[in-house]
Image (cartoon, rainbow, N blue to C red; front, side, top):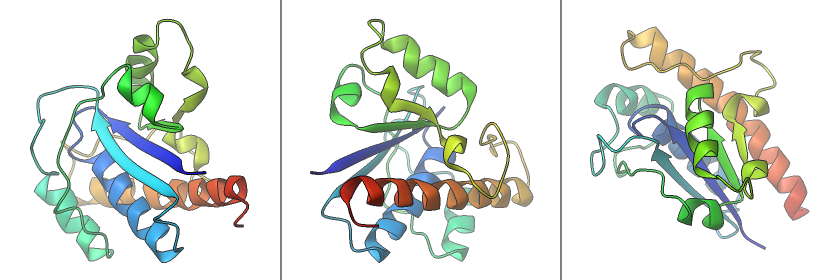
Length: 162
């Protein structure tokens, strides 16, 4: 059984590609790349086809995550609802945007806030670092590493690989 994970933020250039890059490395390090599929998307389409924000690429690279090959895309309903087991949004606005596309409420159970997996950090949302300085990007990476660690543990348990 393959698990499919989609990370969602506003433009798919900062938070969700960072989560994707972090989770890709964690999944590869765990040897689970054949059973966990990972992607990211934005609720808005302004950056479709663009790479991640250069500042996020730089900060992620300093931690060993390669975001350079990722490309922004827009969340696609109903395809993404059908194709993913986990749809993890970075903030409440993203959550509302995604769940509003599920008018029959058939897929609401798949949509969760990314921070619901945080264990170290007690915070409700992953803040958008776009208009922040370096510490904003570092804070986002701290939150995403925390959440991705627990997400992977959760999925490993589901797969019987804990």
